[in-house]
Image 1 (spheres, rainbow, N blue to C red):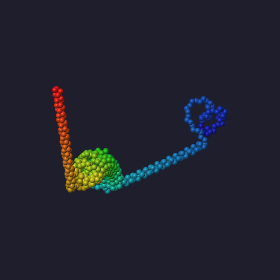
Image 2 (image 1 turned 120 degrees about the vertical axis):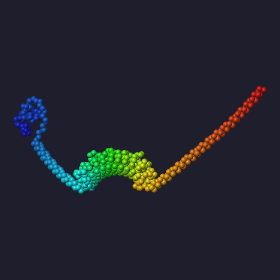
Image 3 (image 1 turned 90 degrees about the horizontal axis):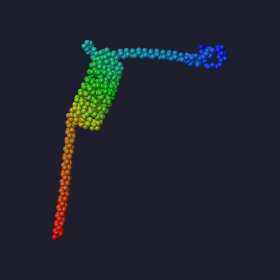
Image 4 (image 1 turned 180 degrees about the vertical axis):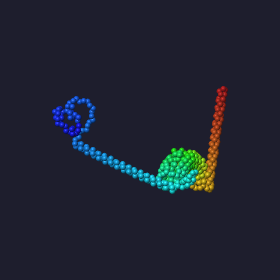
Length: 456
């Protein structure tokens, strides 16, 4: 039934409704047929409640609102469409700019490669360049390098983060990537990567963890001035000879072991408190632990059978006994202990003299060469000290002997006096006994005389 029919019912039906008793409110379907309302209600499914009727004004406002919403929706959709088109255009422009810049950077990189490549040699089949110098070229990316026979690459002092495009250069022997922004050693954990690499310089980068490397032929690794805090994931290396870890943030030497070929280990400028976990380094020749936080030599016996250079400068060692432990390393010839509390307290010359009394094999101490006169003076002072100690020992023995003899004399005198006192006491007791016996004999004689008189 339409809205007009509901609002304007016919007069006949209206009169019939007025003649009848008031009826309960009916729905739209019952309004047009009064007789049907008198029929018994048949059970039927409940219909959803219809919205209330709206008047003309309400309907007008609703239609205006819907029209406004439609316009706003269309405007919003149009705005979104324009924004999508703008974004798409911006992305297209950015992509074109990126591709153009990539093309430009690639061309620039290839030009730098042409300028920096050198060392033409003949391989088994062809001539090939083996050296590439890209140091200080202000590049932040390594593009594909087509010279696969390169042996030596220098990309230091740039802004490089990713060196993935160097991985295909399997004949590489030396790589200098110092002073860049590389933050991981993961490139060198692939067993297939750099099978001939012997020298790797990654100093002054942003590496945080020292891990085990799969560079079987590596001889020297430079990681100075990174951000390394731990070497716990490092499991050693069979062939490495020089390991440089200075100016990092290491707190322990845990992990720095199992390097049978290691000859030089640099740990200066870290936060180490001891170095007792260094072990299985039978070939170690030089150990630099300068500028750390070592307060005590905690290892009772340090086993470095070939160590000749030890630098403990700028630590916090305050007891000379710690250096006596170091004296057990009889192979050391160069020792640096400057800027430790014990050296500052004793003075450099006195410290040197004291050290030379224990080290008879040093050739250089605290950056000063040792002369024969230094050893002679140390030996003279040591001999004087020993003579003085011997004199004191003899004097102490003599004093002890004199004290012993005096004590024996005192005891003998006391024993003598005690014996004399005992003898005097015995003599007194003997005289008393004699007097007693005489008195008894006198009394017996008197009693005998008295008895005789009675008998008479």
